[in-house]
Length: 436
Image (cartoon, rainbow, N blue to C red; front, side):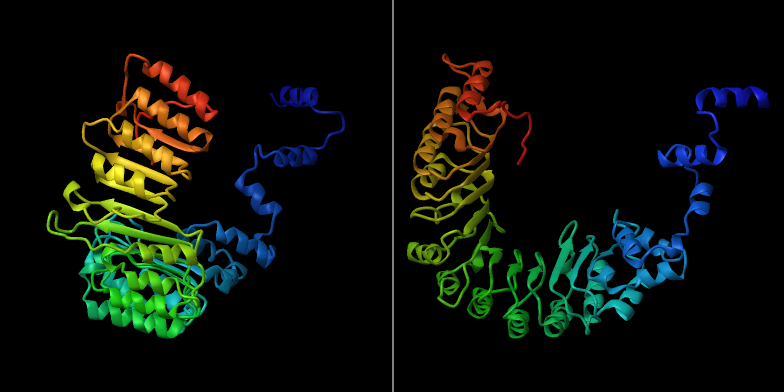
């Protein structure tokens, strides 16, 4: 049997090929590259620090911690400051969450050895109050930090809202006071309040560029106005509509302020039918656009039809509009009349009245429109093709549910997709499900 095996090898290899060279050739192409071969052919402990560091950057935290026990050299790399500049704390209750929580011992090691290295930090917590309180406890210990970006993320219901306002504000103040170089803050659904914002401004006014703080009910228009008045480098801002004011827009339009690049506004009704929304003056919008002509103004609406009265009665420089609930024909007509800067429009639902006239008016007046999405709405095939003709090839995104389109005597669905494709200059089909 042995000689027979050798004959087979001899028949497939060039004469004079040694067993060593055959092994090297096999390993070169990755076939038969066993664990024993790997260990004997390479001394992993002798790899340069920068190579080990690069490997560690691709590992999950758990695997990185395990790899640090390979040898002393790897453990040294595990504690190199560059590896700890960006870190996400995951905090959860194992019995109720799918998150893999960061081990408490590792958290304490980070606080002890790497707090002053942390720069890009986020906290991902589950829906339990205990996890949010644990996040606040960690924040309170970051007294030697120089954090540049901070994010607080609730993966389910906003658990930070269950933490006492005093505890949350105290923890956040530690970071605001000690960092002095914060440039980006994302803290949605938290008990952030005006005094905390004043501390933020007092210590980070020269560095803050992005502030995202939707659904923070303890923040008043005066609190956010303080930020706009003092943080002249602010480029991106996200907030709830109740905080938006004429004074805020004028503050963002002052000569001292840099050009604003992105303004996101969430318009949400907490008590359906009971909210009366204030109106922003056209002069205030005009001042913002004159100061920051390229600003993207994004509005997300989650209202009921009878709550839209305050919006789009005058020209509004909104660029991106998303309607998460039903919106009336009359409201869409106002958008066509008063939103000349509109770039993207998504309507998730409407009544059972065709929107032909409204879409054609939007196509006529919104010359920058490049993206459209329609969900539970109705449009005749003839009206839809007319809309596409008017927009031409500038529509880079067109997501229309098949159920939206009503066949008529001139166009079937089969003919419609060919006609639309011709005007778009690319193949197009209606969607089977929403893609936005």
